[in-house]
Image 1 (tube, rainbow, N blue to C red):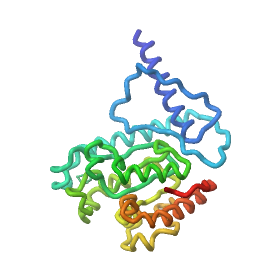
Image 2: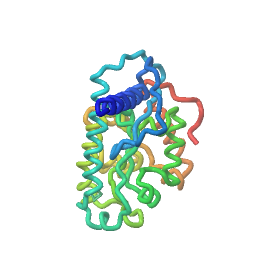
Image 3: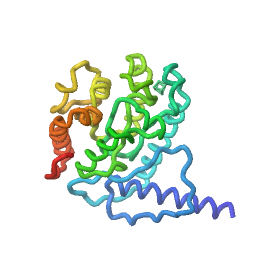
Length: 263
Ligand code: SF4
C-alpha cells in the first residue's frame, strides 16, 4: 500500500512539473490531467503557466528540467517562509495583516517588479490585486500574456501604513529577499513599474521619467522601467508611454507587439 501511495504521489508531482514546463514554453508534451481530489501542495507559491512567445520551437522535457523547476519551487518556498516570519521592519511587521511574497510562474521569462503591497494586497496576500493591480493585469494581457504566465513581486513584502513610500531602511532590509527571489526565478527580462522598483533594482536615483524608454541591465538581465499602474490611474495620458515601453520590452523578447493599444 505504501509503495502504491508513493508511486501515486510521485506520478502527480511529475505530472504537475511537466505541466509547468509545458506552460513555460515547452510544447509537444501532453497536458497533465488535474485531479479534482488532489490536495494543494503545502507552502508552495502559486505555480505556473506559460509565457507565450511569438514562435515556439519544439522542445523535449528532460528529467533535469523537471528537477530544475522543482528546485525553484522549493527554493521559493524556503524564502517565502522566511519572509512570513520576518520582523526586520518593526513598524511594518506590527501593522501588516500578512506578508505578500509574490505570485506567478517560478520559471517565468518575465518578472514585473512593483513597490509594496497596498491595502488590498495586504488583505489578500497577493501583489497587484487592487485597482492598480487590475490595470497591471490589463497591461500584461495587452502584451499577449496571462497574469499567471509571468511572475509578479514587490520590493517590500509588507504594506507601509497608509501606503506611504517605503523608507530607505525598509528597502535595505527587504532587498535580500528580492535578490534571492530573482536569483531563483532567473527571469530573462524584468519590468520595473514605478520609481521605487526601478531605483531599487538599478541602484540609482534617476527619475522614472528618465529611466523609462531605455533598456537597463540587472546582473545581465535586460530591465525595462515604466510608470506604476497607480500613477497611470491618476494620469491616463501616460498610458501611451507605458505602452511604448511594453512594445520595446516585447521586441526585446523577440515578440512582435500586438496592434491593439494598451488600455
Ligand atoms: S518589509 Fe521585508 S524586511 Fe521588512 S519586515 Fe517585511 S519582509 Fe521583513
